Length: 315
Image 1 (cartoon, helix red, strand yellow):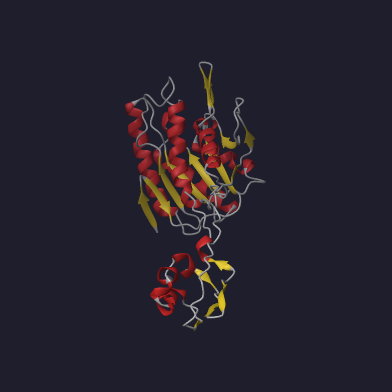
Image 2 (cartoon, rainbow, N blue to C red):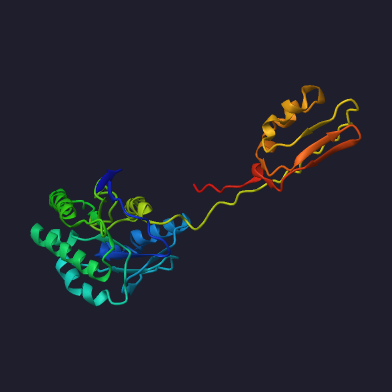
């Protein structure tokens, strides 16, 4: 079953526990580049730091490492500049040995459009790439991008058509064990202003937009964050009140229900509100109270204080 949520098609898959192996796969949009002396590390830099800051246990994998440009992030990937879907399919078997991705981030097809590759050929190649990935891990989750626009309207028309073809591929090949999750990287992306000069490769704003879309889609597949907020706990000592014995009355009350203690003891003793106190209603294993004319109140309160139990809430 596939549901549509916030522009991202998400399969109903069980979150992956332990360290999640994420495989960034594609062309130069995945790898990054240098333009006019400025470094563009691709969406991977922003995505890895975003996931780590949220406490997710992830590991980017790939046959190549870089570029790091002196930045701190996991640089493993298989983004290859200039590659079409056909070349990616041909070389994928040489990259996969030693890799077993849990999740694949696949952004591919821009060079196919620029080189005039027939759409049916591109769709067929990407379907074959998915088959190769499943041979390595039959339960791999495929995040297939509806690829970003360029600054050229005519090219974008072909990209929109290709993205529609990806939706058909998803319907044909997605399975419960290995869902294909269609991630809309096209909508909200400005091919003119979010790309570098030349209109194809992402500028910093484009990289960040791509990373945000991947991150939103990944959350449903990742286990709970490993980082949890620190919550200060204040321990309050119980207040013990000594009451003078009543010479004319002897009352023995033994009960596991402390909410009625005040009523059974009598309102004149001043314990009416004491019995209904929430901190004593939630305290467990009360042993009893004995009150007599010749003795003080001897109270033995159980060792567990439900009111002080703690629960950590993860935001």
